[in-house]
Image 1: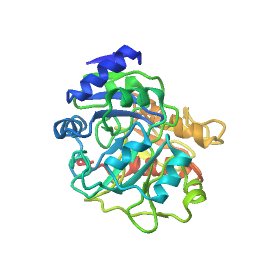
Image 2: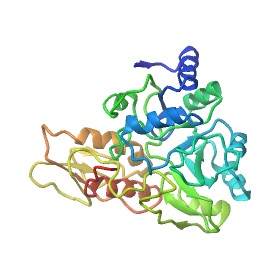
Image 3: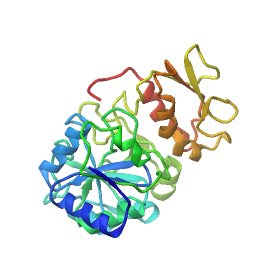
Image 4: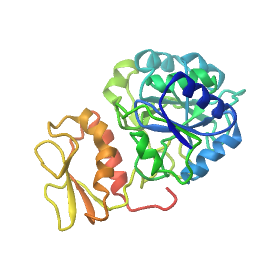
Length: 316
């Protein structure tokens, strides 16, 4: 395993690792992904094993261009409108699989749908174009735990490290992508993210918040316990209990903060890095998090915090 800079030479080496069936961790604008060739069953199985991820939890397929999607899924007019507005970017679209889809069925956990997105990060783009394969790339961490937003986080986050980690610096958005299900008449947000319901509705009209089957989800990020640090998390705190560390937001000051200015985009970008700082069992016995407004990207922040605070599920 090696941590490397995103030079053209290293991108080419990483692409060869992927084509040979190996795994590479790489940055996107959201979080670091654990990438494998989505067309190879064995590579996809390695992703599940490295994360300790349950086999019923599907993966997102990353593509290098909009034109890649027609070979693996069945896009419609709504898809066309959304990708014009938001791709490349932190929006994952769940579509029906193409009948001749070359992507491993393990990616979709046996379902007839497939989740696709085009990341907005130069390293991710260069790697996809060098590989010329769709990449299955969930967050590069153990299943159920905090997502990595820096290369250093990957080193402490996985049961088995990939062959290469490409260090592209800190992720700009810091939260996993919004997931929108287009396999039904009324599109449904399965996972909130930095692209909000209001932004999506401005492009395609009404959308709902979907309820996915927890035992057969169409999208990742649906398990009740997820994104969790090792220490217990208490939400909507304005003061600390004995032994806790307070993570502040805006007017609620803490030893750590998501955003002193109360800026939701800044809070989203800082969320997982700050939770990692707080998750110090030597100093604390719990993490208290200040209230975050349920507005805009605040919906996504609170979604992650609620799952982080939920009773722990060893199968998550």
